[in-house]
Length: 329
Image 1 (cartoon, rainbow, N blue to C red):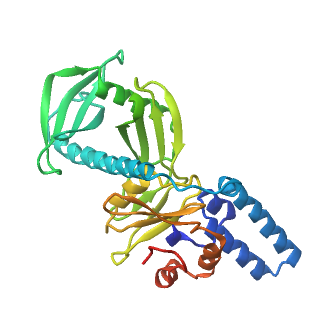
Image 2: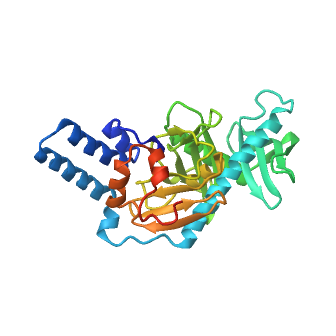
Image 3: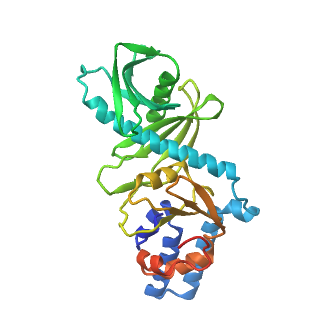
């Protein structure tokens, strides 16, 4: 849940979006407004206590351990590559659209980072889907925003990385069931020869940033089988950032670590500001320099939740801050 969107609303909807703070506030407001008997309020508090236990069971069963620095560094690296992939796809699309091409020559693309920069291959599968036919090759120049396009006639027949990456994207896309809206897809190399395929909601309006509803698939090296599936965030929330904002924050209950797409989101938004992420046991800071830092343990505890729940708005939080939260301005 993004705290700037914390408004009274439907209980189940806010809970589905990870709105632990919002739900606490709503239960508190409901008990006060309706003057429900004390026993009823106690029942709600008890039920919500059970809910928190189920959400943070791992943290209660044993003392939670901060992720190793290597794990946080790996998240940062993947998130930065994900952002670069998105930028390469965008910039190369503009370059390829200027080329006069026959209808049906291309229907997909795959990007890869090389020692000299990003290369984006545009093409299509053969009818038997045993090769990837590369019709256009977009190569990043010394200026990252500029791509030069090379036409291949006849098309190059690829059975290596680009072929398997294109298959992996197709495999993930076939399994994915999202909202009726545009999505962007990216593929990055994973450990042991596997492939990560990301599906993220595409930005459709200037200055409005969609967050959530994103998934990371681990696909086998041949691009044909889904090894695992990781839901990074829940429902999509569209939000804007004020020009004078110095940071933003959200809660995250699906795991106790930030996600690759959290780094992507920080790099893609304007202005460039850090993002603070509250999990059940820790607070993290994702910076515009594409780093992920553990700020504080147990920063999403009940004391801070109760404090934030009493604030009338996100603007009040920005002015007051949260007591004992190290590292937040």
